[in-house]
Structure formats: structure tokens, C-alpha cells
Image (cartoon, rainbow, N blue to C red):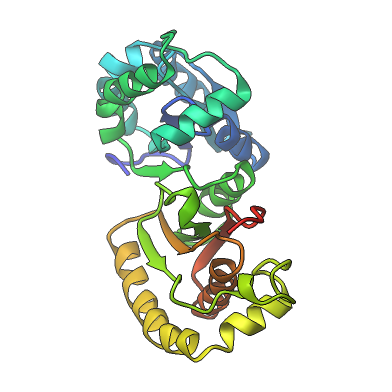
Length: 291
């Protein structure tokens, strides 16, 4: 938080790169009781906050701002300094991996606000332009591994529900043959475990099924693996949280991402619940049937 706080109005400024999920996040704030406005011109920001502060029915607001307002790039720090002298301000910056942003733009078929014909060039240019804005953020959220549902859940649990903020740990199972998830902070390779793909009565079932989980978890090599992995994760995750991380992504990979890695992720999730770590789970390649 910035500067002395003289009243109870809580202001969230939500910004970040195009395609990173700002609309989803702003909708989550609105559903959580925040008075929200999107694409507010920077010169009007202080006026809007001051008027909201004088409205008895408004105690928390969220403002969406992005590169469409070019004054954000030149005057943001100055405007923020003026606001923070009077109000409680939280700045959230959303970002995502370059390839993820490209995929999202192709799925929605929306043009990039910079108007470049080369989408990758536009994304790289926007990231560079927003560097100064990113430096002002209290919280930076990488949405690469988050579905819209998971992003809404993260915003709700972090900013809307009462209680202290906790770092969220995202568990992602994947297949190495389809590539390493670029959003992963930590990677663990479980291709050394016996593969259910080669067991005729297990091949057709995913790693989330009871049959496959029982097979994978009953192996001596799996038990030895967990004896070393779980204490490590239980030790290092609180250290990441202590450093102010809001999100940590752990990738668990096998050959195709259908059998072993989902089963391992499920068991890690069970352990995390015992440790009361906030956890989300995604099985990236579980629907791929080839190995």
C-alpha cells in the first residue's frame, strides 16, 4: 500500500497486457460488490475516486485501465502519487506468456489494440510500453495457467473474501511430447514411473480414475518419490509465499500427460489440502489419447 490512509475507500486499479484477463478479473470484482468502471481515462481517475469517496453507499471500487489510454504510459506514476496520499490503493497487473496471449487472441479473433498486423510484434511492443506501469504494481498475476474460472476464483479469494491473502499453488499435469508448460515455475519429471499405458486394462482410463491412481500410487518407486518430494514442497512453498509471490505453478510431466502425471498431481493436491495450501489443478493433456 502507498502513503497515509485517511479514509475507508478501497480502490483497486486493474491493468496489464491485452488478453491477460482484465475483463474477467473486473467482472469478479463487480460480482464481489465493488463499484467498477472499465477503460477510465487517466485524467478522470482522481475525480472519479474522490466522487466515489463522497458517496455513502460506495466503500470499494475497481478501475480497469489499459494501453488504449496512452496517458497511462506517461502520467500514471504522477496520478498514482496524488491519489495514494488520500486513499487506500491496490494496483494489480495481469500478464501472461506470449504464446498464451497469441492463442487467446486467435480464439477470440479480436484485434490487438495497438493495431499491428503482426500479432506477436504487437504483444512484444505492448509489454515493453507497460514496463513502467508494471513497476508500480502491488501485485503481479501471471494468468498463463489460469482458466477464466480459476482467475475469478483467485480474485474472489484474494480480494473479496475476508481473511489474509495466501499464495495460490497451481498444479499442472502435462505430457512432455506436447511441450513443457511455459508458465511453470517448478518442473518434476515422472517418466521414470511404470506406465499404465502399457497395461491393457488400464490404457483406456485417465490418471484421475481410481484404477490408474491405484496402480501408479502402489509402485515402490512412487512411494520413494513422494517420501522425498512432499517434504521438499512443504518446505519451499512457504518460502515462496514469504517472498510475496501471489501465484506459484508446479508442472508434473510424463510422456503423454494422460496417466502418470494426473495421478501424481491428485496425490500432491491431497497433501496440499492437509497443509492448507490454496491449490488449483489443471490437467493440460489428459484428453490426448496417444502416447
